[in-house]
Amino acid sequence: MAKFITGSELEKAVYDIIWDAEEILMIVSPFVKLDDYFKRLFDKHVRNHKLHIVLIFGKNEGEVSRSMSRADIDYLKNFLNISVIYVPNLHAKYYGNEKKGVVSSINLYDYSFKNNIEFGVYSEVSVLGNLTKTISGSPDQDAWNTCWELAENNELVLAIRPVYEKKLLSIITGKNYVKSDIVYDVTEKFYGSQFNKRKYTEVKRIADFPTEIEMGNYTGVRPSREDVEKESLQVEKNRNTRENKNTGYCIRTGNPIPFNSNRPMSEGAYRVWAQFGDWDYPEAYCHATGRRSYGKTSMRNPIL
Picture 1 (cartoon, rainbow, N blue to C red):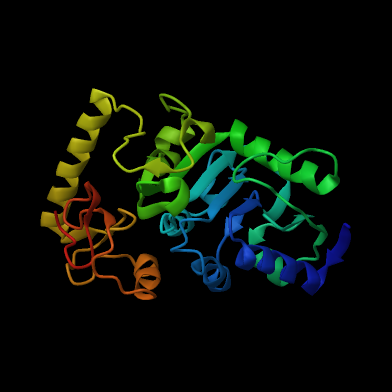
Picture 2 (cartoon, rainbow, N blue to C red):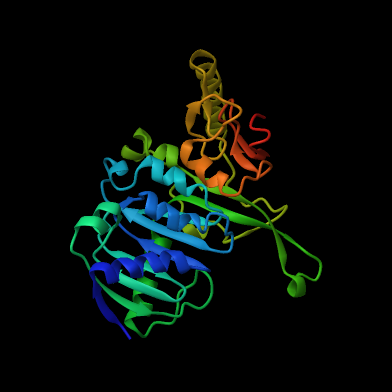
């Protein structure tokens, strides 16, 4: 049964939805700003490849960092199974997992939780199956379906998927999780002039990529020669910048940081890594050049 909530009851409902998610976490919020408390809630899931986080945000097409900062989207790159979608005319807000959800007025924004008077309608739901619509018929199911349609029909910005190695007799014994790959990432364009001028060669949707990857099967998009040549030029530029300014790159997010092979991560990425302290956990970038490493770098070996 649906229940109207506000104040601390609404805050607790949102916090519980994030914390208790096991299979899927759906968040629809035009504005996203993650303070330390929100990050502490999300950190619970940072090594959970079974949980698919679907985050939909929007507004401020001319200056998207006002809707979600570059630092926050870089933080989200720490997760093992996540989709980030942009909807330019988004105003609705929704929080849900496989068991419960709330349609609300509140943004995933620390200021809103601390200062605003917000309302919401909470309900317990049963979302059967992973990343699929449920059967329509009740308001809570219709809310979930509408949010999933937003995810399907709008622009994908970031997609990270788990990679599995199938075992013999996998129907009985299951499959082994190996790592997670960034299968799509246009955040560089998204936060740069190319996004503001709409110079994408092609907009991707969540359905263009699988929900998981089988080890040995490449599912990425074939790159163009122009894209590869641009990446090579950027790597060379990064190398020159490091030589001239002693700049390195975070091995998890690829963002520029001071070059230090003993601490090759940004502060936020290092904080997440330090919870587990796995020196051989595969990372995404080379600390020296910023080139993608495809899991060949780690805290122990940060440079290709």
